[in-house]
Length: 123
Image (cartoon, rainbow, N blue to C red):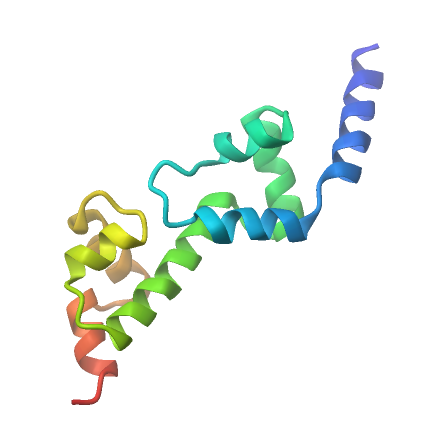
């Protein structure tokens, strides 16, 4: 019976789970520091672990990586097109501390946010 319930749940959720609404949900909320896979799971009425699996199956990457990539692109855009401070940008994209954002940014780009701005903004 457990196998049948698991199969039914998987088939039902796979039919209800659509990439476009999910993408819209993430695009609307990725800058919210409280946005999480648990938030999405609650909306779709599944467990966070199940939603994590569904998300990765549908999007090809984990929720965390997907959100980070969106935040990184937004940060790069803001660094190149605004005079906002790194602290302001980190807050705008959903980080509560600029130091954790700076570490993650440097991991991804091999540059600090300030170095990135200097390299890609023509004065």
